[in-house]
Image 1 (tube, rainbow, N blue to C red):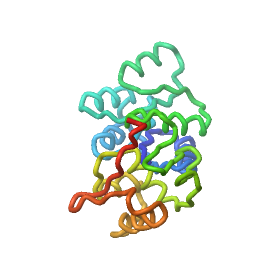
Image 2: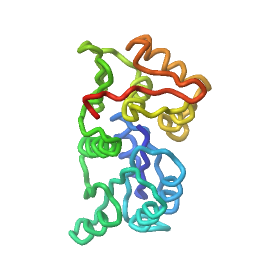
Image 3: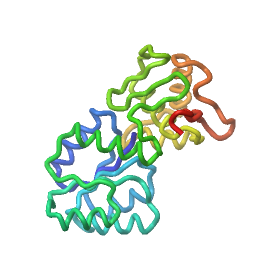
Amino acid sequence: MRILLAEDDPLLGDGLRAGLRQRGFQVDWVRTGDAAERELRAEPYEAAVLDLGLPMKDGLNVLHAARGMGVVLPVLVLTARDAIPDRVRGLDAGADDYVVKPVDLDELAARLRALVRRSHGRPQEVLRARDVALHPAARVVSKAGAPVPLQSREFDLLQELMLNAGRVLSREDLERRLYSWGREVESNAVEVHIHHLRRKLGPSLIHTVRGVGYTVAPDKAAC
């Protein structure tokens, strides 16, 4: 899943980006408040990690502006400001979670996964569709209880479809959700990954809506 990281400290930002990428996230990193606000408006991120002490525009002002423009994606504030009034201001400004630095990367990844699940109305840790189960934290997939090995990009694509079960995502939607900045996308990459997923998981899991895109039917137990 693709997330936005807004952090001005170069060492911390580089470490967060590398650590979250190792845990399966596609990370776009900006270092100023103006850039964070622009990206929040423009790109289809699943979540954002927002520092408050950003240059050019404070993180709280970025958050206020984004919420005022109707940006609804989950925002996790990650900051050194640990006083209770700071936490209250951050949550009242529209933050979905507030974490004080330093943070364990496994905990940060778990918090982001939980925020994304809840934003999609999927409180369960495991995503299910038909007889397929996807475990975001472990990054494993099974069909009828048997493990199915997937390539990293195949897993990411399936996770997006299952998170958005019942919605049709176009090829362009999926490309924007799966690839962070600087990652080259081949013109038929999505179609190739869909073909491989159908071969491994069966032809009926992912439906093609001609002229529109792809969708996975929602799991009735999760509705």
